[in-house]
Structure formats: structure tokens, C-alpha cells
Image (cartoon, rainbow, N blue to C red):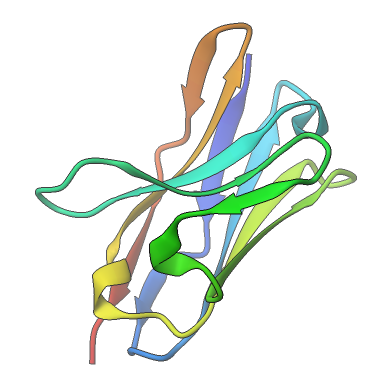
Length: 115
């Protein structure tokens, strides 16, 4: 079983930066791929970035070049560095992993990008 706690969200102006962190307990994150998803009001949840167990990363086209996903195996965390934020990045951001065929989600952290 995996429990996630996301942190680091907040209000930021366009062009600003935030660093989200996903802390896990219950399982060793380095063994699994971990995703960051986001869901804006009235929209479907979408995959933002993924980091595989071997460190391979994948990004949604909308955030390529602006966001970076990374993991710290010693701390059992996965971070999302978000630069040059845009109003359309406003959403609730969630950690996710799939272990043994089961989906695990955190409660999310809110990001608002506004002047």
C-alpha cells in the first residue's frame, strides 16, 4: 500500500515558479513509476509528467521545457519543478502510482497562477 502527501502548491504570478513535492510512505517509490497529474475546474484529470523506476521521464506537450520531474530515492519523494507558470497551469496537482494493479492517489495540492 502507498500513501502520498503532496505539498508546495500556492498562488503565484504568471512567469513565476513553484516546486511541488510528493512524499510517499508504505512502499519504496524507487521501485515504481510515479506520475504527477492535474485537474482544473470543469476539466478532466490529465497526466502532466511521469518518472519511471529507472529515471526515464515523460512530459505532456503543454508543459515541456517548463516543468521537470525528479525523484529522491533516499527521501522517497518525487518533485515537480514548475517554471514560467501560466494561468492555464492553474489546477489541483496529484501524485499517482500503480502498484499491483491498484491505483494510488494523494489528496493533491492546489496551484493558482494569477496576476
